[in-house]
Image (cartoon, rainbow, N blue to C red):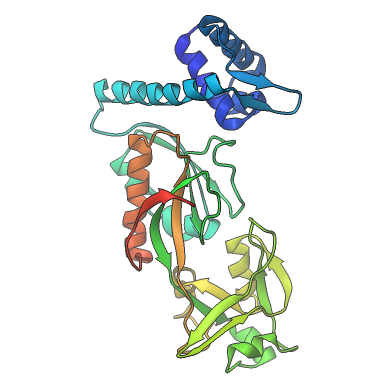
Length: 312
């Protein structure tokens, strides 16, 4: 039994809550992962996991051992990195998941500079607006807009997305120019709905003008769960959009989008990088987060102070 492989297999089973998922993320067979954990338990003479046909739970001894194993694996990773010939540069595979518009418009265009700076980092970037199981899918971090609700994750605020309200000229020609946000709830106006992955529902938008504070829901004939599709629907004239500035700005000079409701304000949408609390923040993850912070400082600077804290 390779003790390193066994400890790594055990840690992944605990994090994934499943031998099958652990095997997938380790690129091993389920049988191999099961045997490694069984051999580890035999060597320690302690039961680390309780197995049923439906789920895997860590025992009290297993939980204590897991905390030690995570630190040990992190120390081994640091030791190998510090002794490598490329010790000045982080290296290895990094799995991240980011919103589709952020990837298309900001992150991917800047990727050549990231690769030039860190040529030994292999970046696997999932591009979606879905809710990702960070631990179960063995993702190192996710970038997400809006307040995070998963209390099991740590999060660093990396930007604040300023929001505005926009519509395509084709929509305004058909429905007319609204002079007040409440008009979006009239029968002849439509919005493009956005289905938030955490709930599968659309939500009203809070808007302010002086002492006025209202929430606008609006009616839609099309609702989507992807940011790129949301923007495309608005450009096609399907309804009014609430957009971060970075998504709207490329379409303003050409007149493809028209700003609405001058003077009305929306609260900025916080942008976070979230990662598992027990996962070692490796050098490669640290430089990726710092790179995202650097990019967002140019595109969506933080309105206040950044922090790293549990999502409570």
